Length: 376
Image (cartoon, helix red, strand yellow):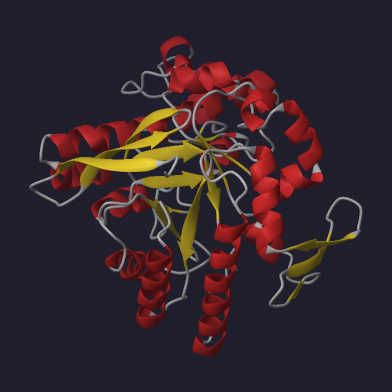
């Protein structure tokens, strides 16, 4: 029996977008949803209690980083990542593939796996589909990801096809390596670059392996907006309607809203806390840089439509002061706001779907914000 299951609760009559419930060993979560990223078993600057208050459901942890520190044995002895970090909601781990394949100058890919250099001490390491799942079993997240290659964009058809076929073989090996199938689910990852037939083939073969959920990989790697939408659409066309769909590494508002239109149920990104560190904040009117002098004497809330702790209690002027003086409290407040902003965006999207007005909601939301061609 799969430890993670999915049910569709409503399909919007206006748009075809859907709401659902993801059932996991650590609780049920409504979809579509945004998942904050906790790379090192912590969402930067936020406590687990704050994550609950923000309405976060599933959060991510990074297999590669946790393998290096504190190590799989420490996590195993701790009883898994939930106990280790005291977060008792659902969790997901990536495969480590994205980090490994970003080390293009130090890695060697073979059929067996990838040899690469440890970024902390220079030691040579080897990561295979089996080893990735072994580490993820020790981490203990509800959802694990298949080990895949995230290819660059653009890529030749020959490279994209070869990589996609190897990723399929790795997916089957990883699925067979799961030592905790009744406690942890594995999602397969659709690859295939910017080639429709390869994306369809990848999805169809993963479906034959009968994963409890499917992710779409190889996007948000430098491609333009039109290409991004095309790759996501091609990938989801061949996926079953009754399984959850996870679009990896997406956090821009227009990308999230487009994803929901294409029946994506789960998205994640480091964006909210990363840009908060530099004073960039998401608001219902668009992004702002709180460091600007115009906010020095602005005693209004950051965003009058936001219900987060930051917006309820502090002004733009105070945030401007904290950012200019490099105070850590400012980074915490801004991380709280940005994370809540994206979690609430998906809450509002779910409500619009339930009311059969998702297209109207999407258009109204984007019209109220200023963003460049890559998004908000």
